[in-house]
Image 1 (cartoon, helix red, strand yellow):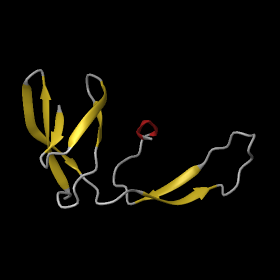
Image 2 (image 1 turned 120 degrees about the vertical axis):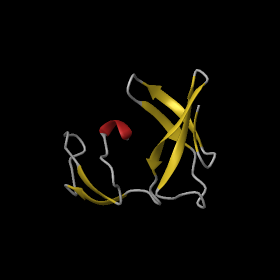
Image 3 (image 1 turned 90 degrees about the vertical axis):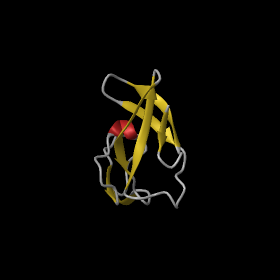
Image 4 (image 1 turned 135 degrees about the horizontal axis):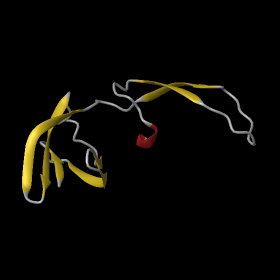
Length: 93
């Protein structure tokens, strides 16, 4: 089980020896701060020593280039993202 200190649950999507990927429901606007403590329970063992940074809003795509592409040719699109403090990984999408 993974939950945040405000009671928001996080549904586990995948795990590895070094990573747990989970999807949260929307945080209550009153509980969103710069960080929240995370409560992780595995095989009846709990850990409350971790926290996670929380953004107050979604990332914003400020530009896409090129601005036109062929519908039949592969083309690399570059999207500029603002208001996103972390590194966005392809697997996050």
